[in-house]
Image 1 (cartoon, rainbow, N blue to C red):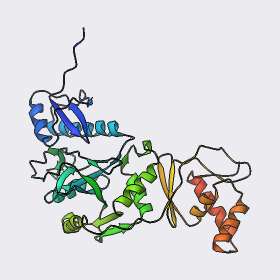
Image 2 (cartoon, rainbow, N blue to C red; image 1 turned 30 degrees about the vertical axis):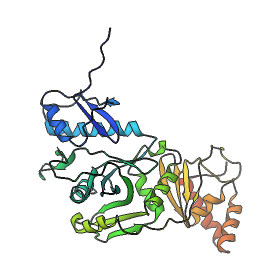
Image 3 (cartoon, rainbow, N blue to C red; image 1 turned 30 degrees about the horizontal axis):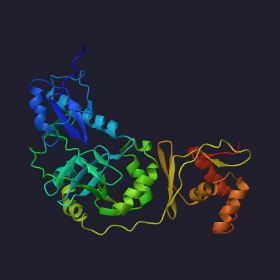
Image 4 (tube, one colour; image 1 turned 45 degrees about the horizontal axis):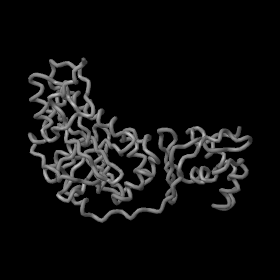
Length: 352
């Protein structure tokens, strides 16, 4: 007769997923303190494996635990939510500001500052469902406490940092892409096509969603567009970020959806599209996802791709371009060059 597996002494809510952390001894109290905002009495849906971790180095151990809890929650929600590499804070109404960026963009710093005025939801992973509900991940913040040892990130409870608590429910309201560097231009509205391309690189398991590009486009429209924050010191732009929650959103631009279709194979004597996962067309740009890669097409690239709803020869594509833009003495060479570029990017098939 087998006994029931023991429930870990530490169970936390990570993006709405109860995750067990199988630790013993002093690590139990230490991790319960670090995860003070996320402790759960629910049965864990999954338990992270920690057998290979070094228990002699508490800092490295606890940082690895946080990473594994996050990955477990991402796995559990893959294919159901947009999971962003983003920090998030919410006001008393639940309006959430997400700050998106790669490692080193300043997400944790931004959240530490913002959460002195808005409620802390997460400093690095934001999970959004189809209703725009944000599922909190109030993990310990990973903070470098010694600049001489930049790889040693200490896990600090949001309570130790006096971060504000969020409301019970929150929803995505504004999106900001963090660009840290010498440019200090501040908040700048971004075109949705380029915003989608940048956001895709900061997601997890996006391709498991139905129509992933459309899902992002819908989310962006519902949030009043996307802003880029170009900054040197985040503190200089704190008021602007908070004020963005009340600022008027950008009007949603017209767009068309081009869902992926089954592979028809090469076309004899004609150019054709390769199979694509999803695409959204804006006024003068097209966001195209092939496999897990996203490309933003413009100019002749858009014209060529749209014209190839059915396979066409080079001559037919030249006629299409000239019908749109008028005759040009180098039209054939320009169109041929654009086709070669798209084929080189793996977006079109040359004639079979």
